[in-house]
Image (cartoon, rainbow, N blue to C red; front, top):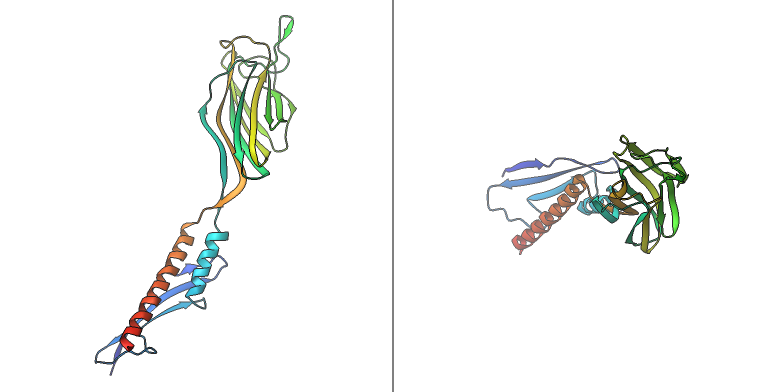
Length: 254
């Protein structure tokens, strides 16, 4: 009595630690009235490179849990441009953090009209416009930017890793400062304040706003890659196939 033998192989999957799993389904069929017993399955599932299907499932879960890229949680997001304020003026934003730890702050400071830097003397007065950034009562940054006004840029207080990329138009045309700062957050409520001080010259002459404000924390959330999903789905599929074959074998042997 002869039996046909067919092998259907699936595409190999590369494991995160460098090995390879090649899954194949071997089908045996034939004529006659041969009755299949418990020890004579006519379909077998083999995993080459791993001990069992349990290993494939465990590998998939490990990939999902520890080998996926991570994305920091956004605690505060204010897209677009805020309402313009005069100098002097301020903005305060409140947001929650889940734990003490490091975070990042991104925003763009926009100056309209003639925001002055350091050294602008208008008549007998000093017309400097000073920008201050405060987190939970502590000064993260303080400085002066020439954004369409007179004077020069000058940093008075700064934080490690802070960057400000400043651009200025011609006189009266304003400008902007794109900022990035590492920050230390505290569990619970956090307070972030933007302050401009200087002589009030009117909104038509000097105004400022905050744009595209984002605060992120250091708590990361795993984002599974497509290869991890494929490995996990393949493992579940093999488990279902094995259970189906076992159940079918038990019915035939009964």
